[in-house]
Length: 319
Image 1: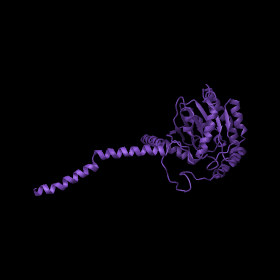
Image 2: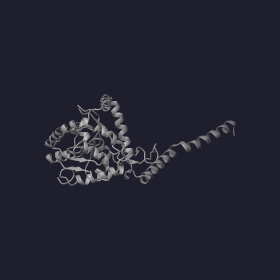
Image 3: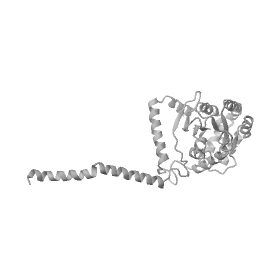
Image 4: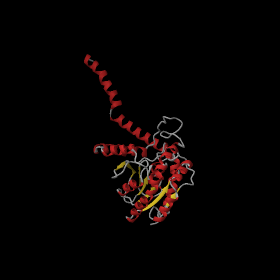
């Protein structure tokens, strides 16, 4: 054998070994193994499992620009002609499970809300969307709160975002929603002792609401009741099916709200307009901060609301 042949032999053998590890067959095999492992993980860690502390409800998000609003408004989930829209403040986002409602046969569900969302602005946003079934969250703070500079700044930033930024964020959002709906992932809790994203402080928001519901805003809130009633009457006249819900909160929070705004006013407005009203005051639901329900309790709350809606003509029950 020539010297050149002896020199080339190790190179040829090395190329053969490399082709075994880096050729198309190993790549295809690795891909197949990954798919099998992902399918196995999906069955072991079911993404449709019941919520615990954190509500499992992955939804796409879209900014809704309402003229005259003092805060940004967002749609979570989908809004379709034959769907149902839940609207209000942050309790809509924390206390309603879209996947529970859709599983119960209420159609496509959208959640329209922002923190301390004001009644008139939220209803204006609802009018911009296709559904004609509306479940409105009623709270004293949603009737009236003075505008907050921080929320106005957030709204201003949303309005100047470039269209390319919105497209990129929408695509990222849709992919992330698909991932979370398809595969459950574990995330570490930086605070320790529980699920990521939830720190239990059962009375935290009570102090905040003492200031928000103080004497300076009470007269203005009572004045705005007539505006709320007129807005709802206008929607009903335009063909909307409307129901109202008051979500459960801690005992201390409920007392603060009732002291600041007579609860019978909500009852009277709904009775005058013929709007079905569910007041969930006699509840035993657990909150993370006195105002927002934990995930498992949000799903129980949603089941109760679904039971109620399925009895109401045109809302989910008989036509």
